[in-house]
Image (cartoon, rainbow, N blue to C red; front, top):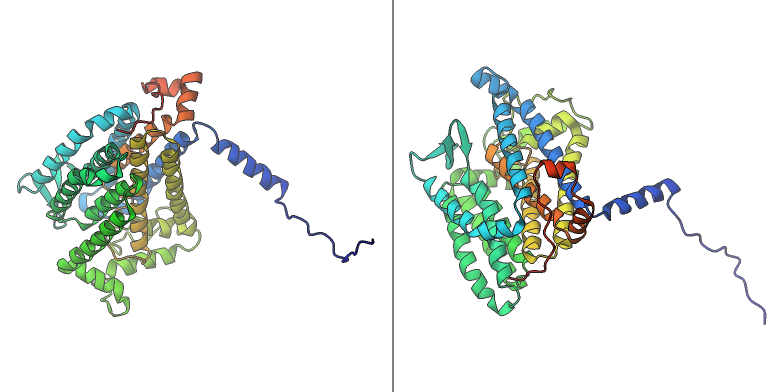
Length: 426
């Protein structure tokens, strides 16, 4: 019997070049190390904070000089909160997770008291039409920012405690939903729609990562969208922003559409490589809130498309790292908190970047770790400290630190050895 040949040569399997394979192998090996999550958290939060300080100095220098005779006024205030945030980062890294969980009800109760007190005239300071701050020794404290982390810690505690029995979801939601609604109401009385949206993201994240039924998530998502739309049209300035976003061609370029258009002009001026650090023109009173809500436009103008892409890449790395920590943790409470904090920071960044580039209506949500705003920066760094703490408590990381020692820096910071991982369910 003869074998018929087709005359075709076998197809070769295309392989990557040796240097690409070597790079991929080295990256895979590095990602498999036990302390990779911790190193990624330290790198991402450090780089975003450093970039934020530099860009706040650049974006605020003109207005700061016009207001107080010094180009460094806003920068020094931001630097002071960065130092405070570094202390909070250490605190979040230093205290064992079980103690944060035990303290979460008391922390949330204190936040509720502060949210009520900030509404009292004479106690809370009103800025840009919103009574959201306490003025203490020349510095501003925004209790709604603290509430975000307190809600994540306490909400995970409540949901995880009832997680083993799905039929007890009503018991788990009974304390959480009324408390969340109360927080939303207090924040909207300030009023602050942007913070309310961030709090809503945290609630949805808690429910999702705690394993809530899809029907319940769909209900909460629908109610959230309806609530945002209603609140968006309830105030005239929010309604004008929404109208300008939906119909930009007919919007007044010197009215509600002014900020959004100036942001796009700034991004367009940046091109690929940017105008150069400190060389942007938008901060010369062309773009309001250049150092805060629209700092991403200044980044695009001065550092170009490459600089803006680097910021997006850092937040993408944060998303990967936070979810990696959650997936590698054995404690259900740590898993829910790590994932929720990560989603909060990344979604808030996505909303900010989205309205700067014209994909979303302007909501006034700052870019985490980058925009000026002391309480926001300090509390974001505190969240980073919690994530770094959770990274040290990954099973492999805890075993490596206990076997090989923690190193000189950990001893200088007074970090205790990570506790052995336990798959707690209550």
